[in-house]
Structure formats: structure tokens, C-alpha cells
Amino acid sequence: MNFTLKVWRQKDAQSKGHFETYQVTNISEGTSFLEMMDILNEQLINEQIDPVAFSKGCKEQHSGPVSFDHDCREGICGACSLYINGRAHGPESAVTTCQLYMRKFKDGQTIVIEPWRSAGFPIIKDLVVDRRAYDKILQAGGFISVNTGGVPDANAIPIRKENADKSMDASSCVGCGACAATCKNGSAMLFVAARVSTLALLPQGKIEAARRAKAMVAKMDELGFGACTNTRACEMECPKKISVSNIARLNREFLAAKLKD
Image (cartoon, rainbow, N blue to C red):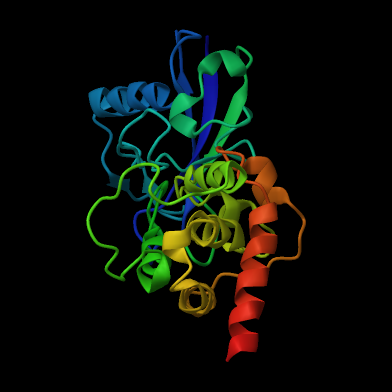
């Protein structure tokens, strides 16, 4: 399979970015998207193109190997955050970019590859964005800090199966940022809601519930993420299919905390 790749190139956060076009050939349909990016980078290294080339009267060309994020490549960590042909993580639903395979594209197709587009995720270089904002939101309250004692037996604290299942579903969020990058408002509400719901549904999380909801929402607003207007784009593009019902739960937790104040 052969593809034309239009890849966003940006030297650093201060530089102006632009698209560059590359050709990749003889790609197996069983190749993952990130493996295809590895093949492109090996091709660029072998061609020994200067990292930055200037042409009089033309824009700056940044043609070294393409920088992109990845880690586990097993759909667990969410580091492989790419916008592919206008969709977060590409055309396949319920998968991260590393679990996307080239058989999902047509031979000869043009593929546009961009970084996350969100005020909360500034570009570091090429396709790499700074996603530390999500870490800061978690640090604001996405944890249990009270002393809960030693590890109890599995059945020592009764939890309704319905609540346990919903908590487990919410905890499957990998924090990739697709929700904020997809939302027209750049909202991180689905991510925050998933983290709040994970603990709000369990007895261990009840003690700090009010503080948690207020602190995480305040940090989200402070970091420049937008408000939720219920378009559900986040749910549609989430690789783990986190439900927007968690946003409703977050709103209830937040309002209850404010009323208590």
C-alpha cells in the first residue's frame, strides 16, 4: 500500500508551523499507524535531510524525522495522541492511534496528520503536545488522601455491583486528551468527570467528594479548558467510550459541594 502523508511540522512552541508532504510506499496492511510513522522517520533519516532548511523568499522548512508521542503501543497509556484526517485517533472507533492499522485506509489515500488542537495542550514540537495539564488536574484532587487503613478483604466493604461496574467503566479513561481536542470548546469535562466518578461511586471516595469536585473543576478552568455544551463529541471520539453520563454525575457532585458551602 502507498500513501501520501501531510504531516504538521513545527520546530518548537514559538515557531510557526506548516504541513509537509511525504510519500511512503510498500506499507503492509497489517502495519500499525505508529509503525508506519517509524518507517517514514527511517526514510527521512536515510535521506539525510537537514533538520532545518531555509529557502530565500520561502517559509522555513523543518524536514528532519517527525516527532510524535508514544509509549506502550498497547492502547493503555493514551500517549499516542494524533489527529488523523480530522478525527482524534483516526477513522476507527474505540481505539487509540497505536491500535489503528493501515488496512483501515485505502491504497493511495492522502492522510493528514496533526497534533491535538487545544489551548490546554500547547505544541512542543511537530506532533508532540504538552499534556501535563491533565496531570495538574489530577493533582488537584483526583486521589484519596485520608488514611483508609490496611488493605481490607475484597468483600469487607459492600458495594453495589451497579456502582462497582460504573466506577470501573469510568476508570478505563487513559487521559489521552481526545475529549478536549475534539470538543469545539476545548473542554476537559469528560476527563474530569471520569476521574471524579471513579471515586464518587465508591465508599472510600465519599469523604473527600466535595473538595475533590470543586478543586478539579477549578483547576480545569484555571488551565484554560472551555465549558461543556453537551455536543457529545467527546463521547464519540473517546477511545474508551467513556459515557457523558459521568459529566452529569460531576455536575451533581459539584452542585452538592457548592450548596454545602
